[in-house]
Amino acid sequence: MGLSVITAETFTPLTLSVLDLVPCLPGSTDEEALRQAAALAQHAERWGYERYWTAEHHDMPGLACSSPEVLLAHVGAKTERIRLGSGAVLLPHYSPLKVAEWFRLLAALYPGRVDLGLGRAPGGDPHAVMALSGNFLGRVAELPKTMASLMELLQNNYKYEGHGVTARPEPQIEPVVWMLGTNVKSAQYAAKFGTGYVFGRFMSERDGVDVLESYRAGFTPSPLQNDPRTILAVSVVCAAAETEAAHWAETLDETAKQTGRSLFQSITGTPRSVYEQLKEMQREYGNDEFLIVCPIPDYTARLECYRLLAEVLKEREGQNE
Image 1 (cartoon, rainbow, N blue to C red):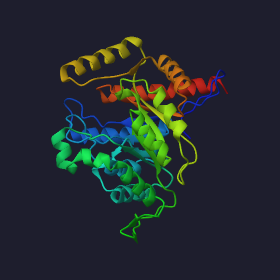
Image 2: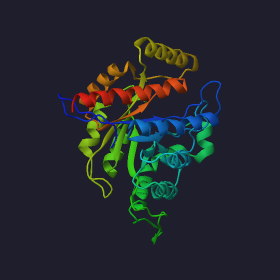
Image 3: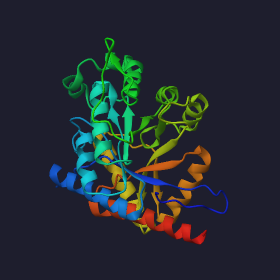
């Protein structure tokens, strides 16, 4: 089980997971970024986080996360318990058969630990997207069909031109499917196909409460999942001292101004402050879990952010036993 805490006020568990964009920080190398990714997963497992998910981006300077399925295979070999997932595989780029094969193979290697997170975004600039899969907009339009085929493959009832096709290997425990997004459209896909839903609050200008409500209201049970499940993906800048947290927040703001990249909603403060903000958000959103991305541009400080969050949760849990 992941880190959970039950308060006397709500008796609602607070579960945390890691979302890693695999940043290659200034002065570092892509090789070091990948070593840091594995180290983060190992530490997160030791500290009690539920999942380690990694993103998919293409030809984006400073990010070494183009192939989550490959990185997850590496991370799985270096960990024992933590769940492994994609945040997300950008489904319009790929055939549903290939995606099912990737994640069924991972599920066979790491039984009961694999999540298949799916997204609709391009994941790169127009030239990189065209080089990867051609007409992206056309592929997005076909997404309902692609999703249906993927779900059929994960249930061993897919046919191509009337002939059965099986995504092999066939694991004893299938990967758990999630849809990631920042709008009602992605929530509708998750509801229609009976998957879990992750709202990317850290990369959205809207708060998303209505998006989660629309998902729950429209959820249709599937053979892979009976009930709606929700995760809120948030950005957290946490440090032992308020001044240090403020320093990193200011650094990120300045970097955003220089690069022209927007930084949306981030939770900043000391461990106790961040904890209280997360609890308040959980009361507002009714989400089952938080997926934490820490954008601090320093590998040591980033690890410390995750450690401090784990520490304060264990402390609060002890107070309520």
